Image (cartoon, helix red, strand yellow):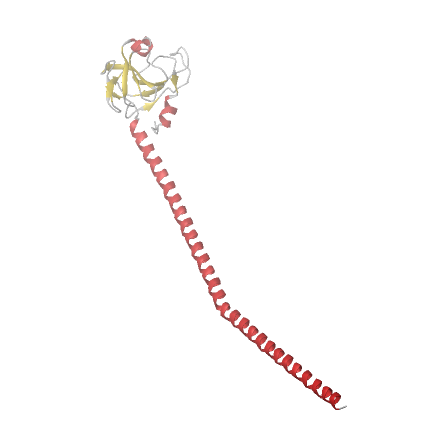
Length: 238
C-alpha cells in the first residue's frame, strides 16, 4: 500500500513539469512572434520614405522630359517658320532677278496692233505686238542671246517684215524685231539684255512707224507665241 501511494504522488509532479515546459515554449513563441511583427513593421516604416522619394524622382524626370519635348517642338516650329520666310525671300529675289533679265524692246511707246488681231495687212492673224514709236528710236535686245537672223527681206522671213533681227535665247525661245530702219548687229553676234541692236522704222508692210515684236519657238515665221503674255510671265509689264 505504501509503494502505490508513492506512484500517485509522483505523476502529478511530472504533469506540472511538462506544463511548465509547454508554457515556457508558448511564451517564447509569443515573444518571438511579437519580435517578428515588430521587425516587419519597422521594415515597412523604413521603406515608405524610399518609395515616396522614388515616386518624386519619377515625376521630376517626367517633367524634365516633357520640358525637353516642348523645347524641341518650339525650335522645330521656329525653324519651319524661318525656312518658309527664307523660301519666300528667295522666290522674291528670283522674281526680281528674272524681271531684270528681260526688258521691253523700246521705251516711251504706245501699244498698237496686238497678237492675234485680224487685218488686211496680214495674210493671217497678227503674229506679234506692235509698239508705235518714231522712226530712229533705239531698239534693244529683250534678253541676252545670239543673233541668228539679221538684214533685209525680214532677215529671211519675207519682205512684209522689212529689215529685221532674230535673237536666240537660252530658254529655247526667239525674239524677233521688224520694220527696222537700221540693223546694228550681225549673225553670230552675242548680245546682252538691253543692248541696242537696231533703230525702229517703217520698212516692209507697215502702215506707219513702229516696231513689230515677236516671241517664237523657232527662228522662223509661223512659230510665234503671244509676246505680251510671255513678257508678263517673265515679269515685264507693257
